[in-house]
Image 1 (spheres, rainbow, N blue to C red):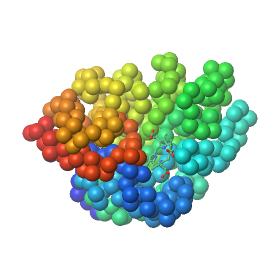
Image 2 (image 1 turned 30 degrees about the horizontal axis):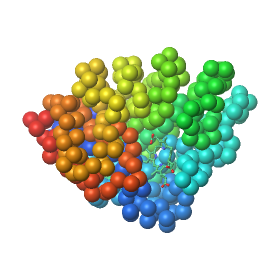
Image 3 (image 1 turned 90 degrees about the vertical axis):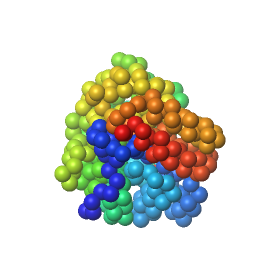
Length: 354
Ligand code: CP3
């Protein structure tokens, strides 16, 4: 494998010195880019795009051609794992993800198997290998997974949800069934992430998009506990370099301390907390990633630069900050504003790494 030419992202996650603050953007390969929409149209459906390693590689690299981003993220989806478990994933145009066979009972859950990452999910590993080859050491490649809890919400609800009536109903009414499902998901995810790392992923991120819908007690029992199991089971070294693990619970600012105590390397932050407060609470244990409100990108270049300046100043001096949005970039953002963001982070970030 070729030498990594830009390792700012990996260094910042390990709180090693950097020349300036690194940045990548959640959903950086996505519908706000016209070239993404063109490749997506050629591929067919979104899942056809995910399952085609050459095209998945093409869209992974598109944002890197436009912007000086410090990391690439595998183009895929968190729902590949439940799909490989036999739930029948599809995306109804404009309505988000759906499953033909949602999981509704203990009997359904008992039938679920652990997918073979180099079997049903081999298309993901092939995408990782293709992307690493084409990246040629420009920047590191991030692999990812959904958290067990977040995947369970889609598997039990059968689609996106606002109230989580079915899955939270199961949590209170049949916790044994939900625990069995979460355990199978955690085991599947450990194999899945370790296969991504063996195929070339240089960091791993766990998206707990819906952990914030839980109570403090149920968050620990049904989400954090299974992320802990994953942190403990993931291979943390590859090619003689540490593979950092980032946990991101959207809406999880109140749980930063127990999240940091899992032994992960970095925590993702949404925009509901000042990064200065987060650093004061957990900055001696972990690096922080975030935390600009994605809606800032609807504003003018002047406002974007000011918001970047404020977040960088809030984190303050020294390494340990990976700039990002607090959640995925929206599809109606002007791509020119993303260039303003990336350049502002690199330019204004230097003063904090003297
Ligand atoms: O960040 C990246 O650039 C990597 C790619 C990535 C996608 N999804 C591509 C995608 C990643 C990391 C994800 C993770 C993901 N997928 C999450 C966790 C992160 C988050 O956003 O909270 C979740 C909850 C999903 C499930 C999912 N997939 C949803 C809710 C949707 C949106 C459906 C819609 O139509 O708005 C998707 C589809 C999806 N995943 C798209 C992309 C670029 C858009 C699909 C398209 O091209 O039509």
